[in-house]
Length: 492
Image (tube, rainbow, N blue to C red):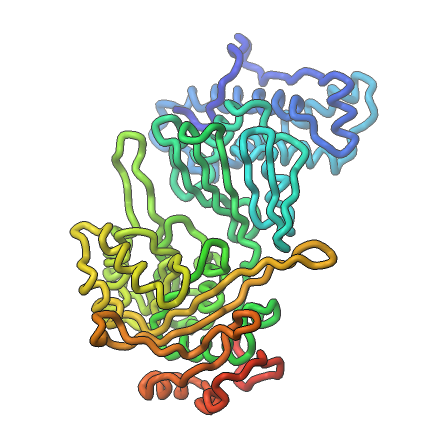
């Protein structure tokens, strides 16, 4: 299929670029009143798509096809050309001149429509939006950073069928690799570049739901370090100092928590403490950590790939985790473990390379062991529960659990994310499960983590060698988060 293929009316017989019609007065007025009219966008999009299809057809026999970047550059040039023509025809018809800012908005809207984002791009540009929920073409709910939900009054497509077409284009063009979203593959997951430096994560379903439904999660906190998490209340200074020393000491860490609890953000902040000279390999379903787009010099990012509708071409997290060991990593970072790849993750973290980290859905820090045991049953061949506990005990040093709490306030709602407990993982005990020591326990009044018991001698020595004050646990049970500076600081 040629790139940027859409359903179009029959092409004209002449070879000139198709000219878009002058929109009727209401669409023109809507452009000037702050909202781009979808009919204007549709007409220009179809004109550009027709030009791209004709060019692609003429290049079908070319041995060296254009790269994705070259195709994008060509598409944007055609959009600029068609928008300029539309503006000129509009002025010739006697309408008021279109402001330059509105012409740029129209250009962005057409580019978004061709790339599959369409009306979603406007929402992805809002800094206060955390999640976008699309329940059919005309019901859009925005989950904001403070936990409130706002209903967006405008549809993102005219019909559900058009929404599906838009999503199909999005999956085909926006990801690291082209992905299918159609009746043959009605479930789709993708990372897109829009929505900030790290982009956003898209999950979409069709056929298996009453209407096409989409959930888009924006990565709001990108350039984040432990100091930033102290500032926003996720950590206090003591927890920050402890975790900084743990990362620098090469502890293998699992960050656990429920959905949207802040696991990935905390993992991203922990990774900022890894020395630049270490080679970090990241393994993810979709790129979310974004370590490879920053200033870190030694990062190998690996992204899984789903099978196509014929069931071929899949590259799983398990495949990638096995591949990581061939890249001589200093540290292996796994975005999230969801299934049988947990066995490969434990092998990767237990192979002698220190300082590996991953995230895992769990209801508490101690529930991580049952979760790993259950996921091990999904591996091929399944991992016995006893073996899962042995592997976990030998591979993991710490489990850091994060929680999310939404509170009603006089001004609306307030959403908080915070570390609630940290446990040290020891050898398998008489119960057949790993022994644990709760280093930080939930404070009774609000669940925030405060010192409980000191680490084992070996772990405490490791932490002390990397700047941690071993005497802080002398005040175990302290009920107030620290708000004064601790020595050592840290980099973002």
